Image (cartoon, rainbow, N blue to C red; front, top):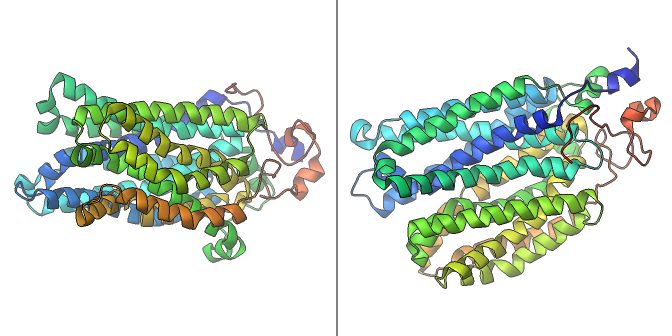
Length: 469
């Protein structure tokens, strides 16, 4: 087979690729946000009626324990992605996610199943965590490897934004029930919401099964290099990159889940907002986040916002903004609440805009899925998933409403030097090698399909695609 022919991917629709990759992120975050926003109802359903604060802590504990399964899921799905292809991993993860989400909506409550109710809930959450271990990194890898030159940031940001869109959809669902019939949600409406979200995964599977494999993975297969690298080899050869990524995901994960997982409860229990007002605030902040993400993506692709610079500014801002943000939130007014939550979002958006590209660009094709999935899921299991529980425990134990900000600041202080010294500028890195040097096969081809607009070999663009402009 002519190498140049093998290097050219078949004609495909860019919109189809983006929709298929975004669908899983949307379902994952819609489910996770619904769980966080419904913490009180879930506590009343799956725990004894007279347990009060203990039930709420138990609900958050199950929320966090589910993240324990993410590293195992990340390893399994990344092995599938590196051996059988990115599409196979994405299809398997969304099936498991959908089934587990439907199951949560159908579980018996404590009054029916007793202690079995929270145990069954935990099993379903573990299944969701396992599937989520391969979803985000798989979708990000698939999108980046399909993205045309000059559109990497926009494509990956578009898919990432559907994580936020899932959160926004969760808020809107809750608000709809609040305005229509609050009792309907707590008495069983929440169950049908989870069932409906799970069924959305079926549509995502349909989209993913129609996709082609990514160009760089097709090249790897054509060269006969697609194989399962032993996990110990990936860790040994890319240990430095994985430590840096662990620090990045731990930092961003804590801030993210303090906002998405803990903030709804914090705003009502600690600050004193009505629950509806808290949700409207949350929705407004998510819209702000999506808009800023897309603006930064344009700036990155145009070369006006270097990846590494955004990471450094974002990680440094986390050190100085977390406490002022929480101080604004605790003043108790709507506008200062919005300002404080938006301020807390800035470090997340700046850091993620640059780092989510660097994370994948600094690893070669045969280690990219595993090399990103392992630190991502370990960090989220240890830090992100436990952030709501830690925040609740700190406030309860100390009586100080600013303690979650102190916790976030401490994580930022540790992450800053690691990211400063460990995150390179990867704008000109080649996807095949994860370095500034092209692969041998790319050098040998020298055809247009493996070149950037500036003539550098080693990167592939989608041909005939329906690109997101």
